[in-house]
Amino acid sequence: MSDSAAVEATMRKVRHLEIRAKKLVTETFGGDYYSSFKGQGLDFNEFREYQHGDDVRFLDWNVTARTGTPYIRTFREERELSMVVAVDISGSTHFGSGSLRKIELAAELAAVLGFSAQKNGDKTGLLLFANEPVLFLPPAKGSKQILRSIREVLTTKPDNPATNLPAACNFLVRSIRRRALVFLISDFLDTDLGQPLATLAHKHETIALHISDPLEKELPAVGKVNFRGSETGHLTMVNTSNSNARMAYRKLSRRYREGMRRQFHRFGIDHVSLSTAENYLPSLQHLLKTRAPNSS
Image 1 (tube, one colour):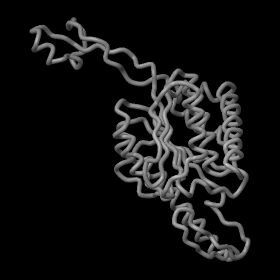
Image 2 (spheres, helix red, strand yellow):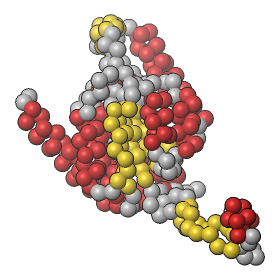
Image 3 (cartoon, helix red, strand yellow):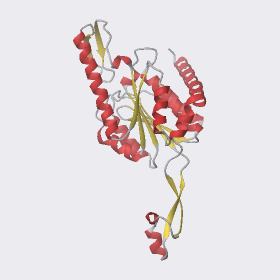
Image 4 (tube, one colour):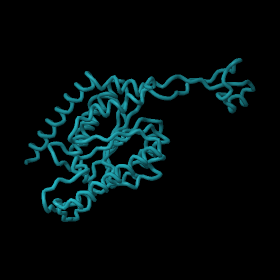
């Protein structure tokens, strides 16, 4: 495919995702996003003299000492939210056993979340990462930011296809000063999540969207197959007709998913698993509805 044809194909994909995402946001998803993320925390407003009944926790001792009169800090509700979608573009996310690759699912998720945030009046940002942070778009408003984000998810190729999720977490902690909403979209095959993920979840509201392919859970019995590691390039021959081999693969996959869920639970991170072979919307809506302030 020529360069011009590749660009044209990418633009068609971006346009398709824009239309589909806007439709989903308008008809179903936008309200769930709004209910869960109405704007969070408090912004400092001004100092004023202490009045009887004020909460003493808001006394500002520096101003009080300087003026000789008790002053408190007043706050107003923060209405605007900054959302950052952090997308894993490592080699493993370019795998797909069906019509949809994991990276294409990630692009659609980024589109739906981006247009939902826009409808809510929020800023949207993007981080692409693999072995290291590859591209960062600071949070900004507007459709151009969202459309560029979709395009970058679909087209950006890392120099090193390996995964380093801790490096991405550290980057987000350093780069975003004010508390933000972070969606981590990854297959989370980098199982060493560790302290950087905990630090990210402490500083920013963090939600993990685990993207997967059906073949990552269970192998079909199709005889001897050579598997090439998408991030290492190593070849491994597996006899998928061997029931013991398939059972071992199934158990290994289950242990990996259980370990991943334990880490998310340990760090207080809401998460959901989304498959390339299934409609992701019901699972994503359920996650957001359970997070809404008025949910039971």
